[in-house]
Image 1 (cartoon, rainbow, N blue to C red):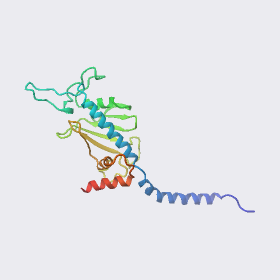
Image 2: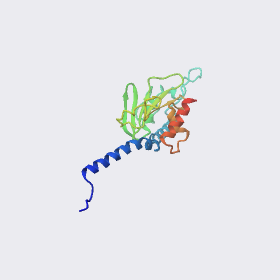
Image 3: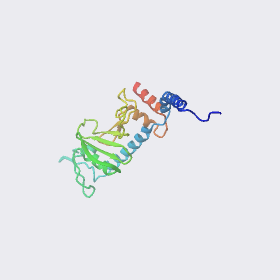
Length: 216
């Protein structure tokens, strides 16, 4: 009688072969997929740009105080010591956490703002975690923002930036905002994303662009 189907041993051998082939092919396939981090990064950049423009453009939120001689005491985000004018606020914001709190009010949140190590942190409904460094301010840049485009990942290959040579899957990116609202993308990979934000480049393509920026 002719045998029908497969024995358990034959099935296990077949599955083993499939597993070996998948292990060999998978890394190459991943490199050819579009950047999921890129779409989240570009979205965060757009959200940040819009928020900065709206907030600094509202004289009820940021306004310049002048000295007795008519000289400005501050400029743009440097005026975070001036309290928000009623009725623009749901509470009086002033000081170093003024901008991140105002920014958080303008986006849909899944996690409300809280303090972590002196920084203001919250999570938007699209899954991006925002962390505003309000304590480490330099003369050139007023505020540093770190975004985590994959905050729920427990993978050891995540939770790192492109600047770390050992980071295989960067999901942390940094922006800097100057007093006048200018936004600088700090990470080379982020800069590569913004060179052609609408292109569905592959992971390899974007990293090749970022490597080229490193060499310049």
